[in-house]
Picture 1 (cartoon, rainbow, N blue to C red):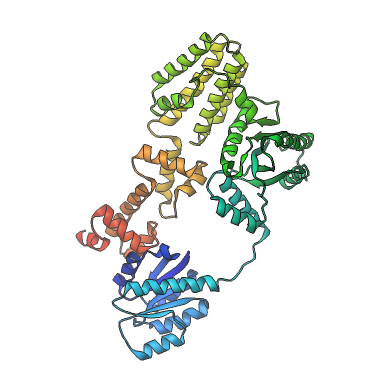
Picture 2 (picture 1 turned 45 degrees about the vertical axis):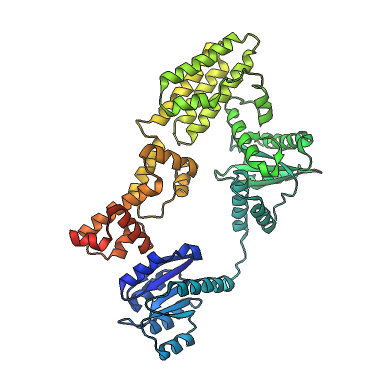
Length: 512
């Protein structure tokens, strides 16, 4: 977004401009306003600005003087002049200073928007080319690849970005692997880059690797191949060879591998790798787990047994009685199925518990890992089916308690506390998701379910309440109050204030 500063000695002009123009549609953002030339210069010393829109006739310093001094501070600055005077001398001097347009008041918004379009085009052309540093390229690579494996980038954009960054995804198939290291012992002088080199050394005809770091900082590898399932053995053999080398260095590798899919379906393979990764909780002796092998263990289960949807409903409804009925029904089915091998039943129960853990992980509960490790160990070592059933019950009731959390989950409590303390800062679902290690889409759904408001509505309501307090108890200007409660665009602040209070800030202040 290019930055805009509005300057006019009539505040209703700058406020009206902020409100009336959809700045973001032009790739612009209003970052401030000023009521005279001196105040504008102070803002320009503090803020990088791309476009100055200024009145020409103001006290203390005229718009023409402001333009001359502003250009000394920011030589690339573009300028649009507003004027109530249709005078040739003003226009002539403005043209000499290199303005984009000279607009008469009252403003013709069609002409203003056409001028903004032309100005942004010039800003794009004038933008200096900045060579990317190696670290920046690495961050971009990680970002593009993470968006790909999460299904958040269209194939045309993926092709464009990978070509620009030199990422080879030309092969038609891929399997995603997530790699963790259990131990840091013996790693001196041997870091992530060395692990990546070891992996790349395993490439062969028809098989290549694209390593990157995901949002959690884990090493992820796209295993790219030419011919579908026939090359799965090559993938696992190459990963095993690298894992053996890491094991010799006492790194304790854990490689979770998803299925081979078409390039467009990478998110499905990544989701499988995510699930396989959780099975290291019960497969302590393995350093590579293939999701295909795990799912094959439960393939012959009776239809409807241990289905997540049947458990999710009572869990989200906080109905432990119904949850107990579902558990009892599934284990009764196992007991009646005489041909069902107990090992397969145990594997299916463990897979269900893994799905439960994945859901609780989204809530950010600090004690979840310990509780699930205990329940899974109980299921693995149980000598009877009753022992496995008790382990599933422990895990399921813990999940139900996590989602109830005295009518509010811990992560929402933390999010609300953070909003109340940091409401004046830029806040988004994405930034809160990163703060509390939860996907922003899931956080948004959970926030709405437990507070009754969308995240945006709640934040705006809270900020407007703070603004009402400041209007009652301070002599600050409206635009200063807007910034103190988190609004940098005064026009947007006016919109939200009128929406939630029923009147504009000035009228509200007069009632006090």
